[in-house]
Amino acid sequence: MRLNRFLYLLVALFAFSSTAVLADDPLFAQHQNVVYAEVHGVGLVMDIFVPKGEKNGLAVVDVVSGAWHSDRGKIRDHMLTQTFHTLCRKGYVVFGVRPGSITKFSALEMRDHVNQGIRWVKDHAKEYGVDPERLGMMGASAGGHLACLTAMTASDGSEVDGKKPPFGDTRVKAVAVFFPPTDFLMFGDKPAGLHSEDRISKLTRRLVGIESTVEPGAEDVTKMLTQISPARLVTPKAPPLLLIHGDADPVVPLQQSEAMVEAYKKAGVPVELVIKKGGAHPWLTIHEEVKVLADWFDKQLAGK
Image (cartoon, rainbow, N blue to C red):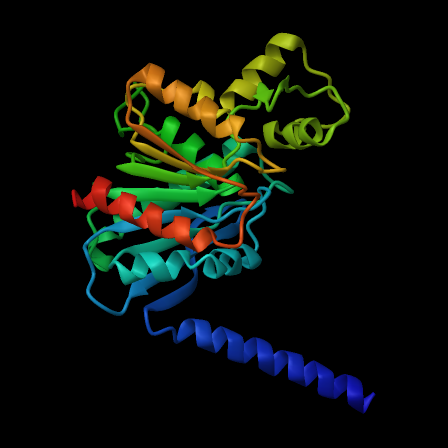
């Protein structure tokens, strides 16, 4: 019993010291669990990373989600990729927005959470010394999907059919993502759907928010999958986009980023695709590509 108590205390002390180290990072001050919205009486939270050195007056919204789950472990994942360190070193304030998770919310609901996060950042831009008209947005995997989905369906704040958009102006200046799912109608080399028992179909049913006992018709399936597929929603109003994807990704095929590039080119919007040779999901040296992403934001947001 005493040994168990000792081990418990040791783990607790280690966890506390790890948190303290993160909070006392020489590059940034980390503000955890800042509530940016409320859904069904429950707060949605973000972590804010403020550079301790010189700021550049710009900010990046990092959509923190993996497999459409947004627990605190996903913040640690982004910490390991040096995302916050790399951006804060350049002077960016980073808002690590955590949308809801797939266990409770559909993809469209999670997109709305990201919209609310963007709105919060714009409303508090002066407080953090950043330009609300020059926001960058990023994400990886599911976070990349939600970042793209949000950007492709963003509102400029204008009324539509006499109704004001619920979150006002949610546009961002540029988007950069790692290995995002972008097309649920064609995932890899085969058409996707909702009726089969494979991994993608089961996941997609949850993303569109239908029960396992419901069998929608073909037209409804196409409509639902289109609504959550950024590659099917690109317009000339889309922001410039950077995609970074490994050619050996076993989870999200490279075809998903290629579909986004094709849609962007058809719309006449600037797009770049960086293909990591041998890159999986992710890869050990991904911090190198995070630097590429940060440099790209410099060009898009600061005109460097």
